View 1 (cartoon, rainbow, N blue to C red):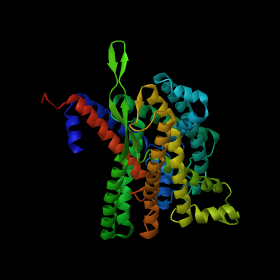
View 2 (view 1 turned 180 degrees about the vertical axis):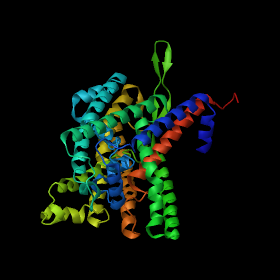
View 3 (view 1 turned 30 degrees about the vertical axis):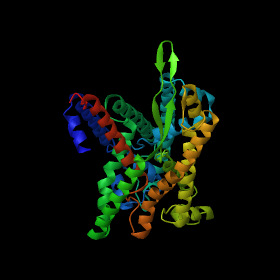
View 4 (view 1 turned 135 degrees about the vertical axis):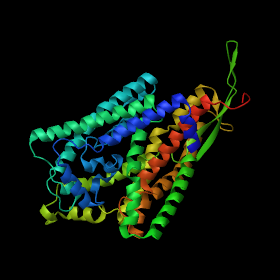
Length: 438
């Protein structure tokens, strides 16, 4: 990987793309530390130091924003509104015929879908920023414990200014991500998420050593981390290749077809989406319970106490059980809506393709469904195991909720890192062809 980056920097156009990407990433990280108007910066820092790792139900959003959420910066919402909007649009493609038609229209339809995603992102940003400002008026909901007032005042002008600034920050993040996609290297949105997670990784790793000062425990966690990364890389690269043969066809005086290819079915076709779904769904009861709490938690309703007991602490066995079941369910659900065996079989039949030993049409769709289900089972179990690593670490070795290895963070870091390196390698091969002409 390091040699690929070295060769990339020696290629002028690739070097410009990499430098442009690094510049956008620097702007993104700078905006994550600029507070919104109307916030007392010193008070926010004091609350963060007192809160430690108690991020509450906003931990997932804080992870994707690189810690900017609890900083109440102009990029506090991070990329989360865009992720949510993209998932919603993708799910609606199965439900709304208009969206399904746009998906089949090629580049023009994709452009229209991207436009809808942008509009929905801004709407979600307004909603999420309003919710965040509402919680900021009572800092205990954000940081827990005893926290002083962090807003300059509670006037409507200040609140509207904060909401407008955070929404504009989300729009700017979308623009920065698209700039990377168009003029840089890799997928812009994925790289911004990768940057947010990696920015906090050293601090989370060093907090393990600072927790009790034991170097043996720190080295043991590092060893486990390397093993987890190696396992994640192995599974993310694993795929089942289904061979496809295309028959020869005579069109005019030209002979077409007769080629062999394959359909790559990844073991983890759902990516990190099931983990995000499961975390968000389990966070909803905690979020709702915030509105029903009594002052100093005295006289809370029984259901609020139940949520505090079983769904707030991630190391509770019941929470782990719910988390695992939701990941398994959402893995099968997401794979079923993103890969349609019937549609793939029809496309193969239309262009004269077939799987050796399988008849075209419905038998091909049944075969693809059978293979897909067999592959999704270990993929779902793999996602559940990786996601449970931080929760098990909290329970066994007393780690904090910011345990860096495992869960959503390690899946995104490895996945985006592999994809970016592959794109760099593919562009290097286009410019440095090695073969008979060497």
